[in-house]
Length: 509
Image (tube, rainbow, N blue to C red; front, top):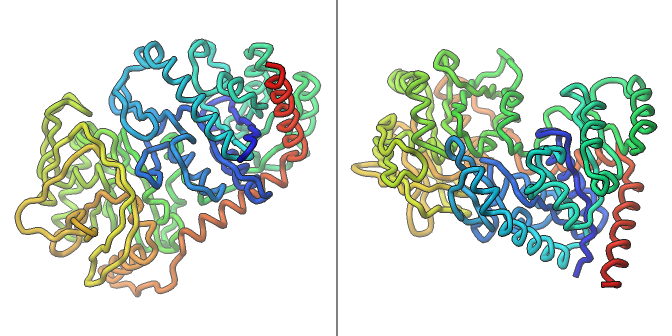
């Protein structure tokens, strides 16, 4: 049984790098022999992760569990919030849909239930693991929200965790944001902060030293590290706020042009991550019809609101552009999950589960019809994908609300143990599947890209990357990088100090 010594990382704002630093500490503690688990009480994200028992949590916590060499469970993210339309989100509790709620209703009606869920999960993790690495959300200085917040200092108090505050120097004004955040904290919470980390630094750290000295003297808080920016880190992103950084560098020498359609409610966009590491692929996200151009591959990724996002495609002109590309028979088109539903004849939502638009015609590139249902499919899947006269063993996961029926004479894409998944045209230029992660399967990705190359008159590439190997190397690289730039000894000392203090308090109760 573990003793559950916690540490919590909070940021001065969203996208300060909390998730990545928590991932680093999960790998560091695991490397050092501690049984380690991540924890984020409440996560708002459309990029999710499926646990081994078919439950849905935030993708960051799933990745952090992988970094710690453990299987993810819903205790690591008991509350997941998935925005599905303006002012409304689907609340996922321990991996299963609980209710659609608006923000005001969530704050008023869910607060006490949320507290109980968080305490239960913290207790379970504390009794099982040696180290608990906790991630906050947004900023602890959101004074308009702090009376009923469920993810920052209230959680730190519940866990009696020391807090490290992270500032992103890339955004500018890092000292102002760190000092301002500290000044807005209550005395108890201010005292809980053991120091700060300055993240995403570029340049000569010696030029920063006068500012570091001033900050420590002014705030009384220790600078625990300045972490240099790591480019092209192969670890899943979770928040769509990073999509503006996601397009690979323009390189005219790359032979395969991949256009990924970025709709407003895009989800699980990490499905396309492996392409960023392929030597012949240029990946770009597009939001306007003129940006689509004439790519070799168009990918329609997942969506949290298929009808609303397809409405965006029609209004932006992207839908018509995709149809035109299909008619030219020069572009390969693949849809994943919500993107798969968009490739069909019709999408209906008679109960208004995701949208007030109850029916919409799709791209009509595949002979399928989708009906939105309240029951949500969340499952790890595997089967044999048939493409280009080859059979590839593939693994993936499914997260979707709709039930899809394929009619007429069609070719399934993936043969499962007792059913089929997906659909494709006879020339295999249009394919759709519910399998997230399909391109993470190295053999299929190699076969697919080489088929595209051959269609362009190019020679196949026989030696391609192993994406899983790249991920493991990235975890180790990140852990080594953070080790080398933070005062790990001080952090561990403070963790033990807080833990011993809580043990002493408990023994007197």
